[in-house]
Amino acid sequence: MYRDAFEPLRTLTATKQTLAESEFEALLNFDATTIFLSEIGDRVSGFALAVSDLKLIPWINPEYFAERFPEHYAAGRLLYIPCFLVDPIHQKGTTFMAITRELARHYGALDAVLAMDCCQYNVDVEQFPSILGAVSQRFTPTVTHELDRQTFWAFELGDG
Image (cartoon, rainbow, N blue to C red; front, side):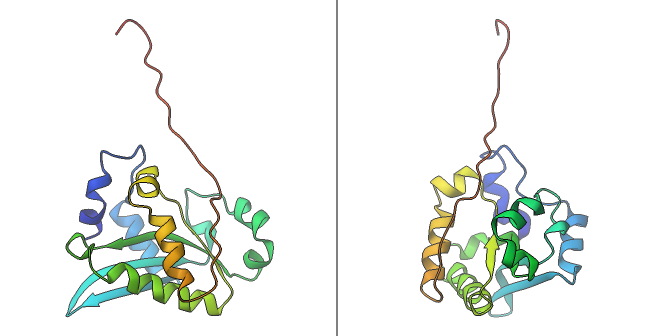
């Protein structure tokens, strides 16, 4: 399900959207990782991971987050979501809403900050951050911040 959910992005984004199997398994087994799981019947329909130790996420800079949210960072209430996915067969259903509701309720009660990265396709086309913020707002006061932007460039050199 993990690979299938991200398959459509394989040729739409400049960076890989999935972890290697060993990295993913390690992330699941960290004490600092909380798993939010949605099931339909006896089958997992989606999940999100929230990691409280930002040093465990190799592609981000924890100091950046500590500078912007110092109280939350110092108190361990700044979490990173390295993975939020819905099984492709359930992407038009209620799974996304259910997981977002649980994230918002759980971390809203803790006055936490959730951070994540999102490829431009998921920002512009799928509107993932906007929808996540709007759904969260239904369950807890939510302010959405775009923190940073990274773009990729190519330079074709020569006559072709």
